[in-house]
Amino acid sequence: MNLQAGTTLAGALAQLPLDPLENRILLCHALGITRVALITHPERTLDADEAARVSALAQRRLAGEPIAYITGEREFFGLDFHVTDAVLIPRPDTELLVELAIERTPQQGRALDMGTGSGAIAVSLAHARPDAGVTALDVSEAALAVARRNAERNRARVRFLHSDWFSSLHGEQFDIIVSNPPYIASGDEHLSQGDLRFEPQGALTDHADGLSALRTIAAGAPAHLVRGGWLLMEHGYDQAAQVRGLLADQYEDVQSWRDLAGIERVTGGRLR
Ligand code: GLN
Image (cartoon, rainbow, N blue to C red; front, side):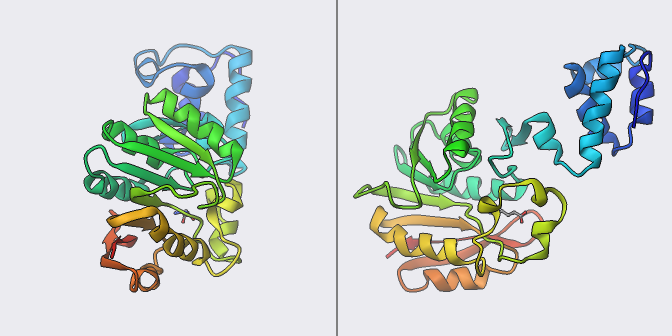
């Protein structure tokens, strides 16, 4: 893939080897132009430097690197997020967890997001519910740095904590706890496919049966939830029944919710 100097935007779009949407995203990113400019000035030509820049990005994408890491951006819940390879790329599936959390956070309530990564969940919740006090924690300082930037960028008020699950929380209590923890079992073939190859393994897999982080959160949350407070966790496509099982003893109203693809994606319950 080598675009020549003098190529027009229209010509570049025709020659780039990715799918049409990704061709447009890369071209706009490399040239620092908007989608509108791409459409209204198809005759604009690329100089040698620009042609080389676009070609290099296309090469990275062809080598499998996720488009979100190349551009450093991903949209989630209608907001723009910075992403680096220190964090999982926010998935549309996770918007379900945010919607459920928004509905279940009481007025002026205290919400906790465990393993916040890019901050997608905590920032979206705080943005939609400025009345709430949102805390987000992560074991990765690099992830927290990305999440802090995202809170600032979206003018969301979130308190960030460096914590290995509950370790830094001491006696603190919340009205709702949410998490999208690593839930892919070690050795799962998906870890060596597509975007996942480039994402932080510690955000994807528990290096065990896929349920260990979900188990840790379900077991530790009662000490940090008010009575009747919700625990909501995202999980894998085939884990809903097992996660309901993890909640059965200590929680009530235990149920699972389906994502847009019709897959049970979030399970939760209220502390008895
Ligand atoms: N939903 C992600 C995937 O299957 C995994 C995210 C996670 O482990 N929390 O690609």
